[in-house]
Length: 476
Image (cartoon, one colour):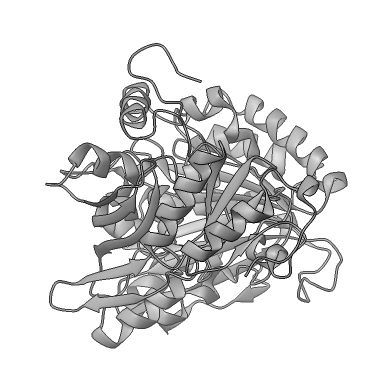
């Protein structure tokens, strides 16, 4: 039941919302009501999120009712599960949260999983492990399956071996802007199937997603941490490692400047360190041989690399498990040539004044370079590395970091490659031209045409928005 609320504080009337609540199984909440803040809470709390009404969907019927209400009241629609991605709220917005649709089932014979629109990766990993199977999840167990996958899905554990997660989606159940429920796959509405796998929430609400699993039960993985003053030696050794890495080896290197705050663990608090994150699908002996030159490059502070069950993947990155405000940005880069390493050390090494907390390079290539038959709209096929920069804190921390990031990217222009990984696009990626540049031009044009077919009024625009366009003229 909807509580009494001052109508002047919201874009919709309480009586209309009460009628919506009678047609919806999940909660329907207005600003100021008990539970509203929790329902709208995002992992990245720097992003403002104050919709006029929020609907906690439990299934497709709730979503259809929410979309009909949004149309009747001329509200834009936002979709959220965990809130890791950037979105924009406001008083003319209806938000649909999907976290209650979190069922996960596994078909071990087909090596396939089906996850509800609100499922998180830890659930899938746990469901698949008893069958000796694993998904192409990211570094954090808390990230939502759908948003991650529809942004491409860069697996921190098996990406170079099996490719982009979006390329391994086999079917989607969705509700589009017209309120229609659709089962989308390679045979049923193939254009929509292609477009969803690279446009995130631009085309509708995903209620379930089906995708491949892989026969992996263990990893040789962990992190090797070096003192920051040895950053150049470590980065050059890492460049050598990635230049000859087998596809079974998926890695990243992160330059970490941690504030002296209790939230960060000792001995890393208040320090500058270099972290190499490792996931190897081969034998422990082969993994140790690959890593020997890296370990010899500089003194090692911490070394956690060991054989582990796949279910322990989260220990490789040790991503924070609580929400925080942060700003982020990304750039695509080629192999780490000697001149690029020199430039990076000048910009982010121990002598540089860097306001960002994390400057990370994730290694691509391998199967991530392939474009399999039936691939979707996402995926960086030409880049060898994704550069990701993140800074935690309020505006006094993030605003200088965002300016510095822009200057860094400008300085790296001679090496920068076209395209950006959608899941690492921060608020700067909300700009229309910035988003257009994240895709190859033919891909963006095709996405815009499909958007015009399925969401001509741009109802789903509170995201990295693709403007609907039937041709060269974009419709606002």
